[in-house]
Amino acid sequence: MMIHAAEGGAGILIPVWQEIVVGAIAFGLLCFVLMKFVFPRMEKTFEARVDAIEGGIERAEKAQEEANQTLEEYRRKLAGAQEEAAAIRDEARADAVAAKEEILVSAREEANRIIAAGHANVEASRQQLVRELRSEVGNLAVDLAGKIIGQRLAGETATEQTVDRFLAELNDDTASEASGAR
Image 1 (cartoon, rainbow, N blue to C red):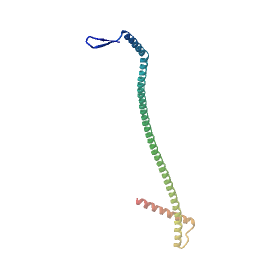
Image 2 (cartoon, rainbow, N blue to C red):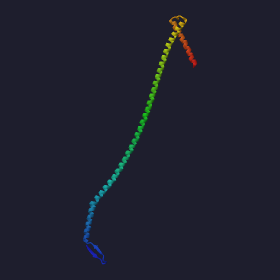
Image 3 (cartoon, rainbow, N blue to C red):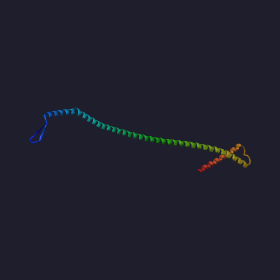
Image 4 (cartoon, rainbow, N blue to C red):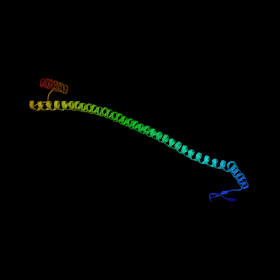
């Protein structure tokens, strides 16, 4: 390197031309190596990072979207299950009401049957008692009449006819009193 002093007293640094040529060639080689090998690798690394970041964002968005869809599907299924449960509950209530009504109808029919059988039994017992009482009252009346008269009344057939006539008159009197009371 040479230093030239100018007339004004300030020194200017002027390099030798060979150094400029060698420096320019070295700079060119360095730029060529950087552009050929280093910069492409750095570009690939940056692209990979960008892809990874953008891909991660896309995957995250896709996962978020799938999660939202799954949540909506879950909510739909839950609403459907709740509706189905309500329908089953309503159906069970309706079945219970129908069963209750059926049991009540059956119980009423059974009660009516039992009451009718009871009435029939009571009526049969009443008629049997009436027959027994008629017979007994007739015999007592004949015995009483015989004691009052002091002799035994004529034959059994005549006694039975007298008792039957007396009871028929008694029935007619009772029936007319019952219809007059109404």
